[in-house]
Amino acid sequence: MKRLFILTLLIGLAYTGINWTTEEEELRCSICTKDTVKQALSNLGIKYKDVVLAQIMLESGDLRSKLTILNNNLLGMKHPKKRETTSTGSTRGYATYSDWYACLEDYCLYQKQILSKKNLTKSQYINYIAKHYAKDPHYKTKILNTIKRLRC
Image 1 (cartoon, helix red, strand yellow):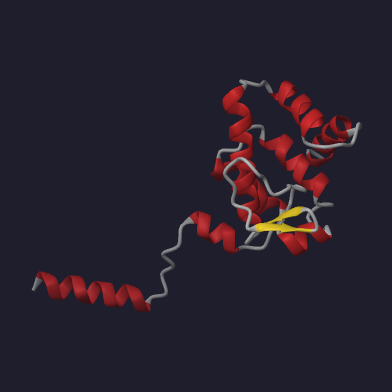
Image 2: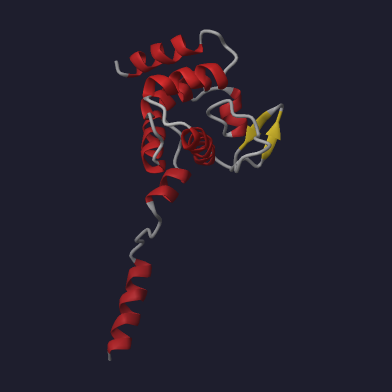
């Protein structure tokens, strides 16, 4: 009797349309927007989320750049040669990802590598990415201005 009840319950649930996906799977399948990116940054445990969101919005042209659309690359990431990555390869010199969420997972790996060697404050992290992440000599100023813009 117990088995029949459980079987009936499972069959009933299968027909109710209950979605058994995790929040991560739902995010991965959702459209890439500022809000879904913010949620993904939180889920992935990214440190200094406001700085990384500013990087994303700056690097991706507010999520509209060709690189973002064609490569699912929100951050202008290159395919790494030495560290663990979620990149599937590279196109025109930039990493390609299966989806936008995989790009953020890769940034998380990049960030963990940096922060495992150095315990950086937020200010030190901004200085680090300004020096090592981008070639633009005004990158730090652009990041700080983008952080201010996003808070509006």
